[in-house]
Image (tube, rainbow, N blue to C red; front, top):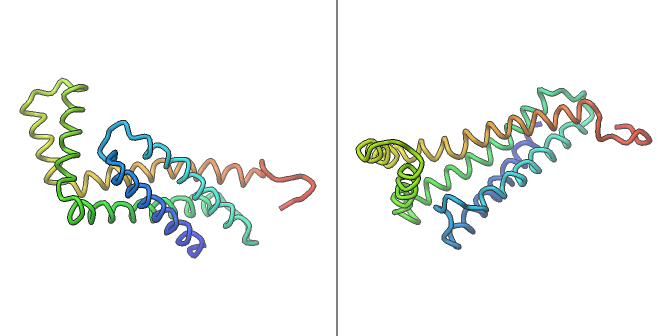
Length: 170
């Protein structure tokens, strides 16, 4: 099981990093209305579902627990790879990346919140000092939440044999 999870997780990580590099080249990686980041959710779902299907067909009895472990493992490995790349990117490739994120966050806070300017500046200062943790929460934690639900739905569908052909039982 771990082998399939690691293969799909590494492949997902490579795809996520390639997507981030593409966004960087197009200079939309700090845009709050970035469509590329939204388009990666179906890609992540496909990687998880295919990994869960591969695990379900290995001859052992399939359980929802195995499906959840596989899906969450794939998404965790892929999003951790992206997080590490983003830290390297912010530290060595684009050293003003955190400042650009802070400007976007400041504009967003001014538009959508009732915070005073002091509170906004305090929040931006916290973001800049803890950007590694902020990026971790933004990428890894959100991916794990969505990965849990995708994995649960896929595992339930496979367990209930909704998608099996009655003429060709699995």
